[in-house]
Picture 1: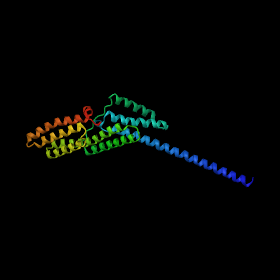
Picture 2: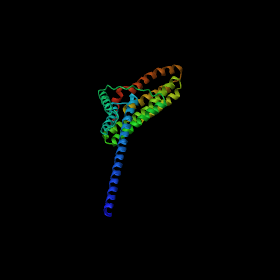
Picture 3: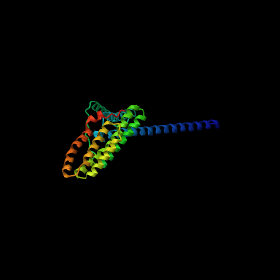
Picture 4: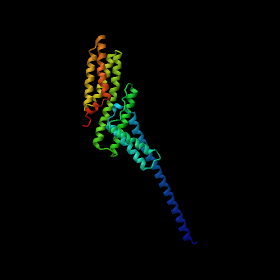
Length: 257
């Protein structure tokens, strides 16, 4: 075997080795990328499911539920395309059943009273995550600009309302303890929070109600008035609690503008 043949054989061996190494690296990159995509889709599915299950019922509209369900449904379909070893078929079936339930108006989620700073903070974090999710769906082209704008605006209103819920709870507690000055301050804070959503008619209705309540409390001077104030509070409490979980306020809330 002459020198030329030896050189050609060595070159062939080197070439084949390089091809094998490159192919192996490409397969490894593809495997890693598939794992990355699968993990991202799993996270997306789980985050949407968590928001759907943990955001209190009074903060949901059918539109918000359907956005979360849309995210979960798309994640399942993308996982199917990647041939994930997760029980994707079962998940997709459950999500589609939930979607039908929401569209038929049969999905009812109980309201949760915001009676501590911890609850308020936690719900605000959930709503902020929902806000980011909607932004992400819009940037990815999953929803149009009008849908994104409407729902982002509404979620911001809900964040303000979460603050107001806590202040109202504290104000009620202060009235029960005859700490009227503190109660007035708490209602002022609630009014300020709702005032941040000036373009929402129900927020403005709440502000008017808080101002009326503040005037009632400012007029208190004696025990009889204290008693009357507590009785009067029950009317405002009932109105606010209805505002929390009655569908009527959602119908009246014009957050499309």
